[in-house]
Length: 293
Image (cartoon, rainbow, N blue to C red; front, side, top):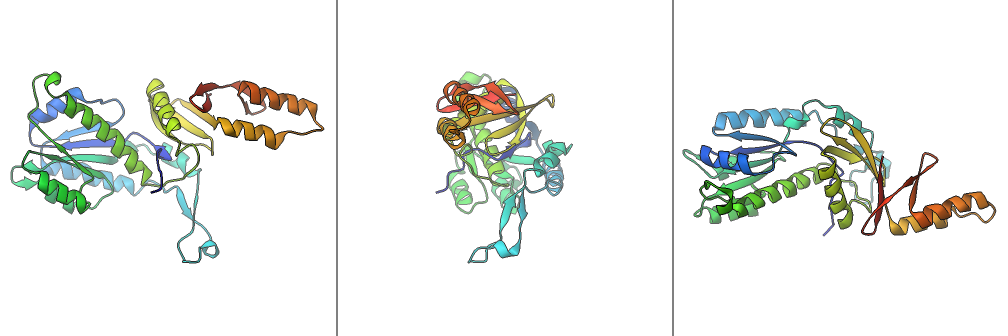
């Protein structure tokens, strides 16, 4: 199985909870982490469909990062040939209403006269759908998962008056939101390189996203990400794997140029980044060296 850890790009999207139980929605809203995403808590079908249709319209305006290239570059099986266009990220960052795009929808299975599994089955979308189930709905939820009508399900219990009685549910909801929004973006357009499939880089990126309140990011080259915080300030995260530092030294060493070699030695021994003719101090995270500027 191909490893895909980190989405090529990600931005703030909307996560919807659709449930006719207002007590449950109030409990969720007061206890889950609301910082990274827009959350909508809806209790009726018409409102849910309205924001869903708005989301689907917005998706049509978002450019694809993958662009078709010359037909003569197709492989022997005549598969479509594509390339990766980094310039499209600027267009995506500039879109004003992309935060209304629904990446994840939690839908209760028991909605009175409506059935959550049926709603999930009828919604033709790339939005990740998570079924909220009661104790008697597991068989139907498992069948809906196997038929790919839902991405997962969450057993729901009555919302307690205090968090300590139902902490496991809150933890699970937060984990599912993180996991499936990442999965949503991984399935949009995916570009694979050494950093994006590196588990340590995934943990480093999460640390940086939390520390700097990053709401958007995208690839900015093979070893860099553009980071945008909630005030629209921009930073560049540049990251190298230690072995790449060493290879950089080997590839650029010149027996006839001592000044250049002294600079390379400084890069190699002190792990500084050469950026725009300057040497920038790096920080270390496991086997990674990185800087933010």
